[in-house]
Length: 248
Image 1 (tube, rainbow, N blue to C red):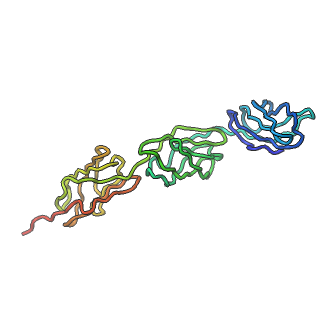
Image 2: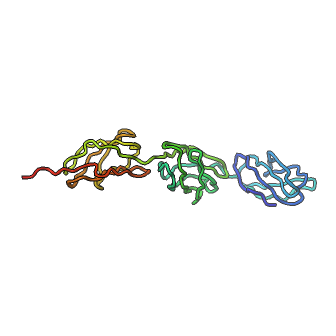
C-alpha cells in the first residue's frame, strides 16, 4: 500500500494519497495513533488524507469494514532553518548562483525571492544552491525556503542594477595621482571598485548617484574610468586625463 508523499511537516497539513486494494468505505486513516484530519474516498483503490501533527516515523493505516491494513511508514520532517546566504546581493537580471546554508534543507523543493520561485539543487541537509531569478526592481526582497517540513522566512537578498557613470569632476589631474574626483551617475551605492586605466582607486560612496574617488598614479593621457558593482560595470571611455608635470 504505497503512499505519496511519504513525508511531511511536523505541523501536519500534508495531503497524502494512499493507493491499495479494497479501500471502499474507508472509515479511518491513522498516522500512528492520530487520526487524519480529512479523509476523502477517491476510488476503491485510492483515498487521500491530510496528516495530523507529529514527529519521527509513524505507521499509516487504513480502516474499512473489512479490517485495518498493515502500516506503511510516514516520516515527519521539521521546518527548515536558514542561517545565511553565501551572497546577499546580485544583478537585477538574475542568473547568478548562490549558496544557502542552514539545517533541514535536504527536502527543499523551492526557494522564493520576493515571491518569485526557483528550484534549488540540494547538496546536503545543511546546504543548497539556487540560481537567482530575475527581480522586478532593484532593492531588497525576502527569501524563503520550502521543504517537506514547511516554509521558513527571514533572509534578505538585494537586487542591484548596473551602474552608470554620467560625469567626473575634475576631469584631469597630475600623473602623480592624489586628485579627489567626484563621480556622478546612477546605482552607485553598491559600488565595489573604481579603476583609472585599470588601476584600483580608493573611493567612498556618498549616495546612489555620487561617489568620491582619489586617483592613483598614472601615465600622461586620457584613460578609462570603470565603476563596478555586483550587477556589472560601466566604462567612461577616456573620461580622465593625466597631465605630466613640468620639467626643466
